[in-house]
Length: 381
Length: 142
Image (cartoon, rainbow over the protein chains, first blue to last red):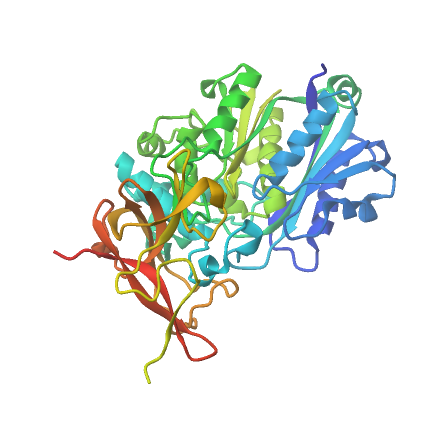
């Protein structure tokens, strides 16, 4: 079977872009990705795309050209981008196609997401009485984690501080100003122990990746990035997930643990081999827990690692080098693909002011979302 | 005339009752307990209804610091009148862990592992002037 490569990457700046629809931002990202590898839209044989609030992804063909291609819409919550990428990977791996696009875009209204109990299979009382907020879940999960592993709440501030510091170096990020630790810790308490600056916000943006079989990739680029692993897993009974009126008495490992393990096995690599890492940081607590769930440290080691700078761009496990969700915001459809975009940029050595030094060879991405699923990738140059 | 109290959802807890209890279902084969019973987590023929214990331990907690969006939230507050409320998971020994509003929003009164007890609290008034009530857990005093 052929190897699968990423040959072109495109992004529309994250944040708020008035006067431009989510779909237009998606189309912009596709055009940028085409330009990046010297292809044109009629060269594209298939697409997988997703958007949670920006309309059907397949309507992008109105903007890009009616060329008759297969275009499948993907919807998997926060893992929408990861699932689009997984699908595109499988199509090429299976020999069905040689070159295609994974694309995601979104444009969310301001403020926390307002969830609909019915679409999550829940009765209305749950939302009606104020229990159905993702922010609450994040607060409760990290509250327990900090307690069980004896971590101080300040560790959450350190994660956010790093995100803003990295965002400052990323021209496509939304939040581009450093925020000091005191301001982060003392900002409005939204869901104890998480303050306002520790959360990412719903946002806008678009990302497109062009994938090709190795043979075709060599025709267009001399710097393909290989997708060594793509995995996606859902929750087991006992997992602590968002929008759960009940939890089992015993905790099962999180879906991330399974997705991560599958990715390492597929690539024949381990967490110690990753030179640049993107993990889901919908809020500071998520980055803390995901560090351990993805195998980058043991439970409880995070505070030490953060304090010694291990996860900084200059550290031994550079993490969320583009500012992550906290500095970029979360346009759901595009968010997972942004992580891959960043890793490709880093592996090419094109990340500018935030470039990880010493020619990173291998990179890792991870998304996690409702109602308890996770997707991981491993990339190599 | 006193306002009539109606549950936020029929079948969520026993009501009216002097000792209200949450209504769950236990799967016969596995012994797993699912809450609430009204949700079809498990088929009726494979499970039996159980009334949950009213005391347990605080598994985790948070304080909801801002007014949730409506929909889905139906609380009576406005941005001006909103006061943060506590939310937590309570581990009912040998049964299940349930999510619930808490009667306190003071972080100093909440500690993981502390004893909690179920109670019924007024939530809002409905269109007919009834008082809509829901369940909550309160720290056990003393």
